[in-house]
Length: 239
Image (cartoon, rainbow, N blue to C red; front, side, top):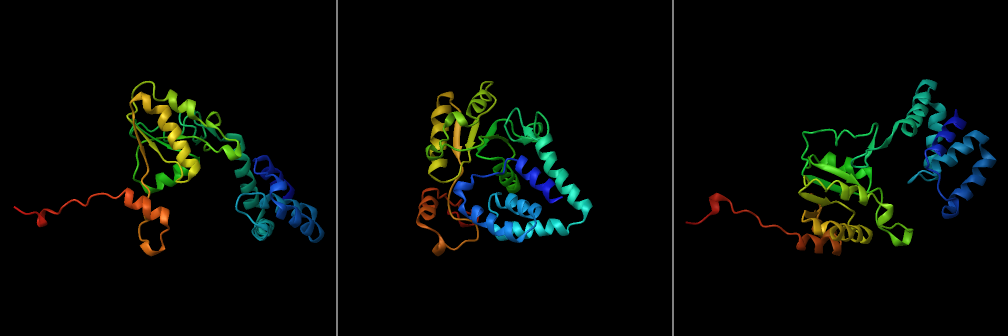
């Protein structure tokens, strides 16, 4: 079973460059001396997943070993199902099971707005807020010269093609509030600007429930720049 799960994890393209993870090499030699080969290989496979350290990889591995065979088979089938059945939506490039994702297929959603995000996980995050009911477009990356990622590596051509029929009236840029996100937002603005479509970007400021004393300088600056007027209460109005 351990060998099967390792093969599935490897197939899912989660393998990372070991030269950039020296801890993987060190952990591999230690594990190889103390664990059975199938177990060691599974620990290494989990360790290559984003955010999984050596100890977490070991805990996950031994959890799977103790897992009932039926649950283990379901886990393995779920991994295979992702690779065999999941594709990119032909419209927004979000992850989908068919040619069109559920959001693009929902005609009850606002067809005049498109929220541009970096990754499919961003779609899930925004949907959780229940504050947006328009369409999405997933770039599958962000402009990052350091990492060799340019505009041609993103789903920008597909975005432009969605604007040709004149239905879209607003593009909401929801890239991350960092240097790469700012650069990507500026590029999209220059790319779409001539079309005369309204271009907005998510506001940046203080998170709800936080204390000002704990906010960093950049967050406070953006909060001040993005401040909004408080509507006057009718009770406080003067004749």
